[in-house]
View (tube, rainbow, N blue to C red):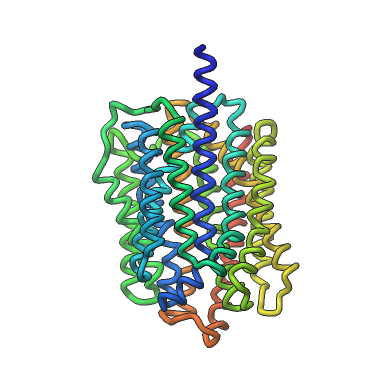
Length: 459
């Protein structure tokens, strides 16, 4: 009887996290394809347009660590369910937005909900799935994310072109309500790991404001205010790390980084990889719709090349990482990501669709080979009592990486294009920012290869 109950809980946990991960990923990629259309409707300038994507990544990064700690103290299922409810609300607010600022505010709320879902999802899986199955299930989880990423551009292209971009967010409301129902009625039980811990409010505020200052600074360079905010944010993050070494109940367990080489270098690899790849879909959407003049549907069909390859490779790489050294598989993946990014740096208005798809396929193969083995190495390198912290830390690396990636893209758009509406007059400047972005991202992946290999032998 007990065995059947545990099996039921395991299945319910897996299904819940798979559905919610698909939903969150779908909304992210679907929104990216719709951004040019949204920008035109609200007459948004180039920098403000980038904030439609950047606001989600920033708000997720700001709250992910605090949310992970809160989940450990008060219950991972509670935070998971609350995140789903908040996702429904934010999707509804996005669907009825009447200007760009309203939509960005709703996307901030959606980013917070995404943080609550992702911070608890992997921790729930790690809590109930045996270690010898973890790599396989994480592979399925990441594959589900990539299926959502793959479906997003295609479905968004159809909806945006024939119904309107708001229908994307209405679809999010429906998805969210289904997930809320499933988790509320099917996922029974609760998991905590730090019920006697105290929540560090001061560190949470320092951390969140510092990340916000960094991102705001990126978007306002080369103006003096941009450098001031960027410098202030970096100093704030240094203060945050110092404080974490002194407090009794830290949000970020610095000792895990100090005493666990596999954990620290695997997280560094993840940070670098996400910093180098996360803004590619956003930039490709701008390139295909502004420079190539493609419709949202055609742009979406090309972009899904990358995510389909990710979805196919991820579970295979996850299973491989249960038997072969994670660092080998992940390092090969990072190398392929660098290759794909450098290939994308040669795109121009005359580039053929076959070449574009090939570049995206190489990039997708690289990320698919990297992500599952790297995540498995992180979760397998800590004791069970630290699984919640490890999950939150991994998600934080992803979200900070996504934020930094969009920060770099926003910075270069600000420098090359500025606060103007995108039009054919500014296409040359947009392409210059695109090319430099891909070169910088490719260089980051080169650094990531060394970080991945340096972690040493670990399955």
